[in-house]
Image (spheres, rainbow, N blue to C red):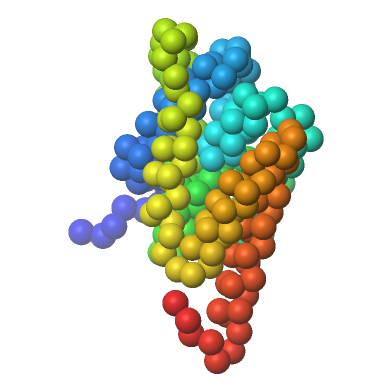
Length: 238
């Protein structure tokens, strides 16, 4: 039996379906973010607005930590920008597939671009027949976005009901550890984590949480340096 022809709706549905298994790992982080946001003093509207507009889990968690610590807006915005720098690499990787799309499609898909959406969409683009592949990206991205809004809202409701005597601060470092450990697969990643973590501890006494910003910049720089050396001709280190 011949394979069914690809249509925008079939691509959209396939993208949504392929994102579903990943949601099992996304939902807990959304719940934690919502609970931590209101526990840190943000209103429910502002906490939900982070997920609606920013839509970047790790950056949102960092922002909440900085805001709770009284960091100025410039430090919060700068840290979010640095944490999300990896999206430039994602965009560069997908640019050839987006070249024929309209500006509206490019802006929409850029907004929906996340780690999980990139992983699923990249696999789809490698399978060829790309006429309606952008609908697949839309399906996978919107599924993830919708789930993130729902679990953020649930976390906000949960956090609003947690007694004030309960401390949720421990959840933030545990969440980042859960995100970080699976990514430590090579020397650049390990160097980035070790340098950023070490400097964050050493510079923890700096005002306005600027030590964290410096640690993030240093970690990204260390990882990029080792990654660049690894890609030099004649080098094949793991």
